Image 1 (tube, rainbow over the protein chains, first blue to last red):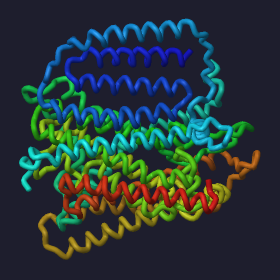
Image 2: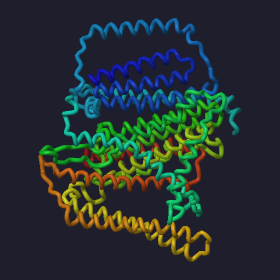
Image 3: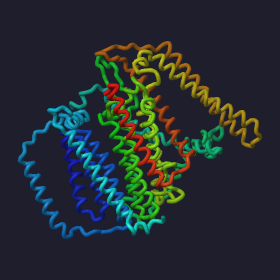
Image 4: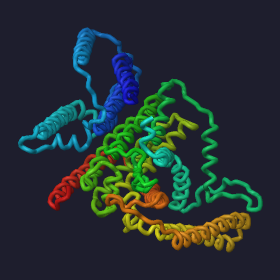
Length: 179
Length: 451
């Protein structure tokens, strides 16, 4: 019962702040609403007896990634109060897509039987690590995916550095720097 | 209600009483501000604040060694006018200072303040953990919260709509992101050795093996540097940057709004020094003695504790007597006034020494509670558990105060870094050392056959 009350509160906050991301005029407010949404999602993960996932959500998404995002927003146009229009031509595709997705997810949720045991451990530290790093031959082999993901992130980072370097080494930026 | 009847009333009382620990960082502000001022005075060869006083009969002006200055500052900040410059973003401007200060109350929840209390209550073995939340993710929660507290500075800088504040906010966000990485990575070695995120487990590992600072000396220094950088104090005060950015992100703030930032900074020091003490200095564990030994000789342990406290008070007395002697030799006009003030301290300290020694002797001779062993655990009486918790708490406080002093020491000793130097140190030096340390620790732990 208590868990249900918490879930409703957190769910309302999560969905409300997700709407705010869509509706807010200024990108910084959008980012802040996203932070709020992620925090309440972390709370929901905690309710689902997976505190590890919840804390990682707070640490990585709300803490690090959104901090980087606010940094980027502030570097790009944070000083101005730019009021971007709420709807433009892209919205023609985005809004129907969101509606269709909501409908699909809602349909699936309504159809699926809801049997929920709130005491079962789903994402404890031990369980997560054992599932992820099970190197037995009969195991699920997630650790290979994990390593491949690491490589993928590394390559994307290298690409980003290369792109940035290209911009830095160009004639314009050489003239701009006092060297 | 089932949830209430699932535990005995004493468990509920202690569980609720543990929430008082949320106020420890705020209380530490009261300790840290005089410590900072006296410390700065000590390093710069001057006296520090010594003018504000409380007047009481007979003893005259009581200055409490500069402590009264705190109350004056607090009063000033509270009664100053709340002021917002024109053009600020009103909502964020007022909300931003509250964020770091609100998180200060949340952060102490995972720090173990004493070892798990295990005692016998009406024939039932009761176990109460030392932290407010006994979660298996422990230290990660603390990091998550401390990374959130940087939003306060970022939003304050943005909402102020001033160039200086804005630059300060930018620097804060970049500092937080870079040093959080170093902080997390340098901590991983000790987590690997202890095999747990839970701080209570880490402390008990250190208690039974070796302190973290011995097992992971390199990580300790990386962690300490990253911690100091994260609090954003000199030499890492690029976000405030007095020579270049006026006051950084809180340039436009005054009165208690500035006070909240100020208190948030000091509480952050408190939390971080508790974290360093817990991760690398054995936390609440008493050096060279395991909790089991201590509980087996509870009376003796309490006596030794009283002896140590009495020694500290005697050291204070020694200082006061030396001051008095020096003062008598001078011919300052106010020397009799000050000597009269000191006589109050002397009386209080001598009374404290007498009480402590009496308590120590009493507990040595007359206090020997018996321990029972239930399922392989030593289960003592309630009094033993409370006594152990008290000793643990005091040990932890001593360790953390020592680290608080390190913060002050570093601030007033080292010259400040330039912004690019800070980034260079974070990304190119500390991060790499921490990574190598982690790999070496993992390999050695695997070879030796730990976890």
